[in-house]
Image (tube, rainbow, N blue to C red; front, side):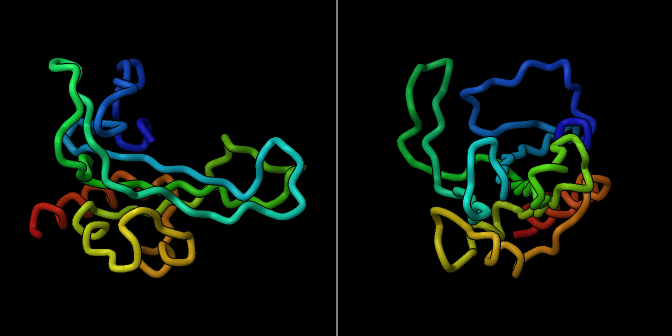
Length: 148
């Protein structure tokens, strides 16, 4: 995700931060990922669901959690490793992935659940996009966030 948005990959990420990545334009991203396949034995493909619950941000300066849970990112990127053949899956092959991008405003207005979103529900919102379209879509979704 960092390379798609021109983030310096040599920058150390704050693993306890309120969001995952910060673009050069100042857009805060939260990245969620899921896959149909896993390294362990599976009888069937995994069902896909992403957690979207509000969180209390931990402040490293005060060493305290925020009082009020909220969404801290501007844009959420849901990444699905969609390839379904264990013999040929390659997580480094970007064609094996679909990406869904939602602004926090869109996620906040989602009426089904404020805790998670299934792939089926997500597919009704934005269309899946490829890796090459991520930077532009993140920018567009952030602009939507600023208007709402």
